[in-house]
Image 1 (cartoon, rainbow, N blue to C red):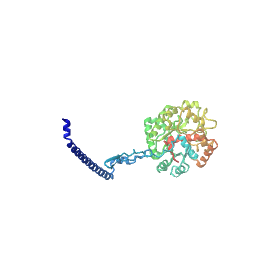
Image 2 (image 1 turned 60 degrees about the vertical axis):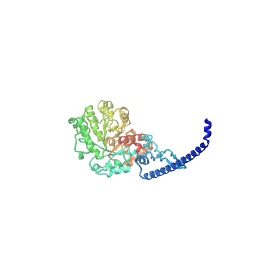
Image 3 (image 1 turned 90 degrees about the vertical axis):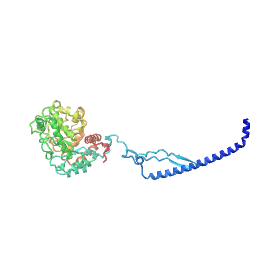
Image 4 (image 1 turned 30 degrees about the vertical axis):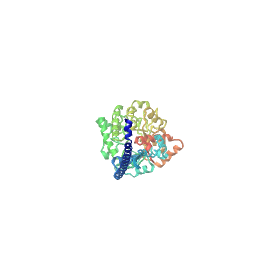
Length: 447
């Protein structure tokens, strides 16, 4: 029966197949129309997006804007958007390659060390960095000349206030690529430099007798603020000589006390006040002038033996140097010390004295001389230029001269390096210490 039914319906089966073909063709036609319409919509959407792209949205702006704020930040660009194209009946999407980061400029070669950087300076520039010279305080002319022409490392100013108030000291410091120390003698009492700017203050001895260490720190802070406001960076104080000499003698009331621990308390308080306001203190006069036989301003001065100095005069350094470290300088006196200095050689020119300070006391900061140009303990035995060369040969970092022919001095210093009297590597090490005290990274110096 089933076969009969199939036979009976065979004419109808042919009609059904034709109808199915017709329906399928219609479906294909409709699908093609839809694809075309969809392609048209996509094209219109892309055109609309292109019109909108004239105003960059914030997120895209962040990508298309360079992110570089310094040489170390490479610029980046926005990744390209995918694109859609219609070919025939089916749309295709092309994915662009991932964005790349623009290569940054090659970094400059690293600075291996401060000494390597300093060794590239001209020799005369390195030597000048170790000279502190006195200048006329009434105006800026001489100060500008010695800095602009000779590039000295430091100025010593004392007397009239014209240079302080001119603004020139700040300008000279700002213009110097190697930094400039500007120093004064501001101890109080008989030895003051800014009394016209901030009034008189008592001597060290009077301060210790009438004030607490905390009050001395505050006084030093006030004084230091005045110094800083006028371009001064270094105070050649406090005196740490232990002395019971009468007030008006060479040290006398410049000493805080004849008791070493009192000296430690008050000299330390004064140094702390200076440092809190950015002024560098300098402890003086190593290894101790308080028991000297005379006045080194006038002539040769001899102290008790080194063993005796250890019992009193050197005790303040035992406490202060470890605490202050390289934030302070140390000034050498012009003293003949039995058991320490070489024959006929004062401490300021003595290799043994520098070794004592470096090796026994572990001091790694700047060592400077007292003035070499006008003190009898030096001028009675040496010429000014000779003394400066001897001091550097001994290992001193900075020579102080209130008056000197700078051309003659630097010529002789260069000659001393040339003939071996001065070691260029030692000169470089001294320059590095002075830069560190001034807060300058040798690797950033551009001459």
